[in-house]
Amino acid sequence: MAKLNEYFQPQSLSVALELFGDSNRILRPLAGGTDLVPAMSKGEIKADGLVDLSKIPEIRGISIDGNEVKIGSTTTFTRIETSPIIRAKALLLSEAASLVGSPQIRNSGTVGGNIANASPAADTVTALVTLDAVATVESINGSRRVLVSDLLCGVGKTNIQPQEIITHITFKIPPIGSKTGFIKLGRRKALAIARMNLAIIITVDDGEISFARVGLGAVGPNPRRFTVLEDSLLGQTPSESLVDRFACEAEREVTNVLGSRASAGYKCEAVKGLARDLLSRLISESRQGVV
Image 1 (spheres, one colour):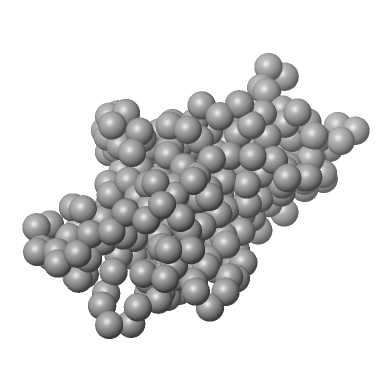
Image 2 (cartoon, rainbow, N blue to C red):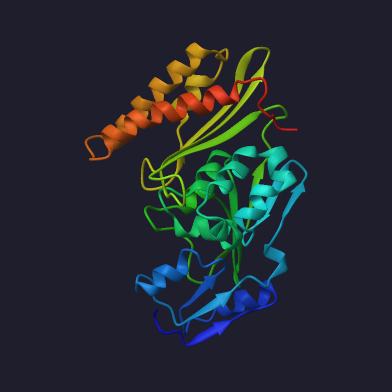
């Protein structure tokens, strides 16, 4: 592992931001460390020191503020998976968190770190992008709110500046009664990094889908919403024939994105199965809706 000159464990957000504001050294935020520590061990990330964010209460936990859910950036995947708030208001995010790595990784890895790592296959990021989640990014000079999807700039890249850290993520609660879900395809059952993942939100009013969100991960540099797939659901009556049409539309969209890449044949076929399985699950009467 690369030699570190300094290690800090601030007890408040203000102290942490002061540390990052020091331009004389390069400091990296440390939360769960599940991505950062291996990368530093390989020499892929350089830093003069680490700032451990785990003892800062202001950026941890889950709450509801009006019609929004607020998640602190150092909240672990396990906390998100088991949160009654998340399970009631955004089950897709709970399901995504439950499929991240091993129990040890879920117990230590954090949602803020998952965003900052900017992996094409990040499970909770696909769910958050589908929810149109907004990240609050802060520094000693102030804060800004930006869509999680707009923070991502390619594989392993974000527009978070060296003096900034993600402090919170918020998203509007989907309409009451909406069905939400997440599904992933990995290389193997345990500890799998997703070869592809899919998140869907639908609301049915008077027998027709009135609201739809669809997000895909590991189909491009970063997870993103697919508005063509959303439009293919709007105004439609939930049925098996709709499931089949949606699966074919998903295949076409992935084909358009991947073109002649080596993984295209596999992923274009695989997305049909993911789309069919997840949408069928969501239109089932037994599926829990947003309460």
